[in-house]
Image (cartoon, rainbow, N blue to C red):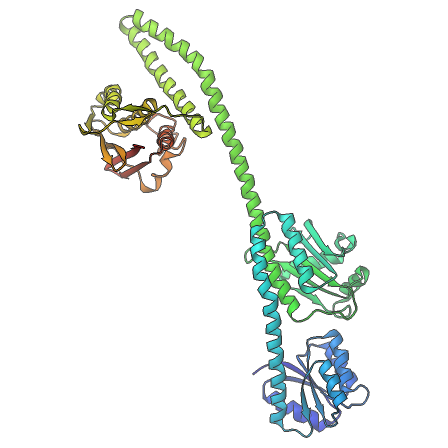
Length: 530
């Protein structure tokens, strides 16, 4: 059952009846008229896919009927019934686009075969037009997707529409969700009058209608739309228009693509609406992507600004704190040497906490130097065993206070490495102090070094609570802490591991963690020999 609509025009009633019965039996929808004037009027009232017309009829001849209908329905398929064919008539019919001729007398099978063949040829023609129109759009899509500037993108889309459907006017407008306010617009070809977007006017009404329905508005002539649309077309001086929503699959349409032609009778072909629909869909996606890119860029710039302010704050805070801290530590040292008993212990507490504050300031400064690229390496040949021994000696009192043991495993034949002593000390002390801090009392901690190809690998392990898998990448982020800031039990700003990573990567090494909740953690880093 095809379902195409067929208009039969013949002044002989029995011919009309024969054709109607045969075609309806094939599933076509049929309307019959007795002369050419009735055929033109019927075609104005409703759309038809095919015109089956007699050549000689009173009033308008069949070829004149076809010519009149094609002025407002250019895609209608025409098949002629004739018993008086001449070569001139055949040539004229071919010029008008007649696909088939049915010669009287004819059988129902011959009629059906001619109609089927004509419609199939038209289907193939439309498909060919559609493919020709769509293929360039796939190439254009690459261009759209590579453009992230919204105004440039709008202009590009407008120019493509102008060239693809050969129109006099193209207007591409981005509107708010209600279709009331123009956010951005661009034109190609001759600009339309400003009255198109007059507040509460017909242009605004059409835009809202298209955006709300999500469907194209196609007007092939001033008599084809309602009176309000016809009046607007007269005001704008146009005779045909297509308004297409710029729609993405999710969310409201972004706006409309308006194309129009000035010349009377210059209607759109069958492939034009589909081409514009595909173009608008691609354009909407590209515009949405460009908007998201702009938002991402703004967010990134804001983050950069915040990061810059944070770095400046760290720098200023570290600088301003060093002088009063140095004075405080100097006087605390003097008091510790001069006082006795309980007062001396209180002085020691001041010294100890002043040193903690000094370490925090050093961490803040190190982090800033790493972030700005100001930190430099001062390489010299040193013994890994000696470097580890110095750190363990300095940390022993902290471990002893928690009744923890620290095991050291360094092979006797481990060759020296070229490294920066101060930065290696910072890395080792941060990892070891973390292990002591998070390992419960009476727990075990260890440091091990070994050859790994062209590098030395150092591991710091503990029997602490372990780190969940989903947090193991985050712990090297500045200021990140596994514990909640308001309820955590361990002190610190969350800078130690980020400094460890920065310094290890500075000398070309790698750092990582292996951990299992409830079974402890192992932090490892490498020192390349080259």
